[in-house]
Image 1 (spheres, rainbow, N blue to C red):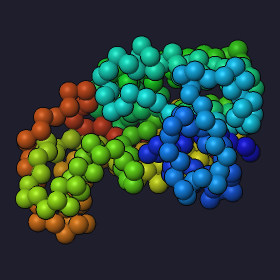
Image 2 (cartoon, rainbow, N blue to C red):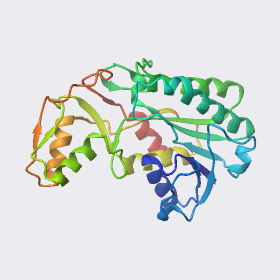
Image 3 (tube, helix red, strand yellow):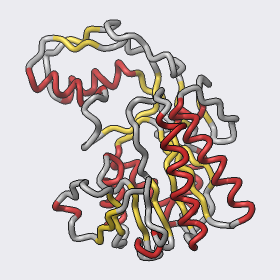
Image 4 (cartoon, rainbow, N blue to C red):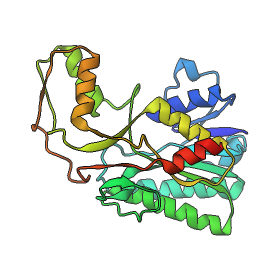
Length: 280
């Protein structure tokens, strides 16, 4: 199977490319003009393309891949920005519509757990979506558009609904990189929330492996939670980071307010993911 990857040099993309290579693939990397391709990835074919202004023959320029792993999305990490609905959504829809009309047979695109909105507990893919953030709404509308498009133009779709990923290359403003930076500086304390939130955390390398397995199984997987299925408190995650670094830093709890766009306790149900991996 021939595979192209958008967002290939991003946080998730770098790990996806590595997993594709381990699976014997030679992916085409779709990168924005001006992006930096790491030396370790430079042996792959690179196509410089702005998905906001793609050429008419974009699918041909990508080498007419059988499958696309679409990881690109701008405007993060500001989940509330109108950019997601007003600019990013129409760009994404137009780009993917063009590739599918040109003959793309299989699409794996990343969604977000924020599509579930303020629903609590273990979240299954068959729950109705109820996003409250602009980012969650834009992703949800793109998913709905693609599923509607399938009725007139059959193609395999995997909508990988990501939960909380962490690991190498993560944005510096995320909790774990911030805490590790404070430890590296020798800070005495680290300001954070009360840490009582329950979340679903997954190492990015593991998530990338799941994404590749789903993309290469040749099936119409639909919506799939990419998650651990295990609720972990934010405090527990922070304490594990501190313990791993054997740091004396003190966690200053309650200094940062809880996000108002997330429920206090939610995590993914991974039964469908497990079934998909077994059948792969």
